[in-house]
Length: 153
Image (cartoon, rainbow, N blue to C red; front, side, top):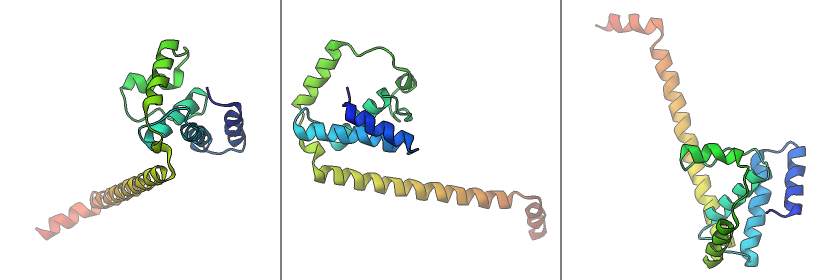
């Protein structure tokens, strides 16, 4: 369960009209603090971020479902009503306690941010290339271009 202070900060962000990802950032921040305090560990920074985002979704932040996983799992994430069973909750906590703490270190988070930014920039470049190609195709398929092709023959 997220801390009251975290929920308050996220609600404040929502009132200010900030993006859902900004609101969710509060939950991710809290999770990183938990790992640093020694409450539990994580394998890598991505896991800490995923736990934070999951908590944000459960707290009502309007985030899109996680990108990976089965379609039914993605569909159900926004509509989860039942509480997690005690057995499952304790098993998860025990598993996380066995993990290391270095996943939330400054250097690990920095590395994660850099690789994420690199991935974003290549995606953006790819999509812009695709839209440029689309514009070219649309120019070629106009009526005047077909008569131009016939003249060349």
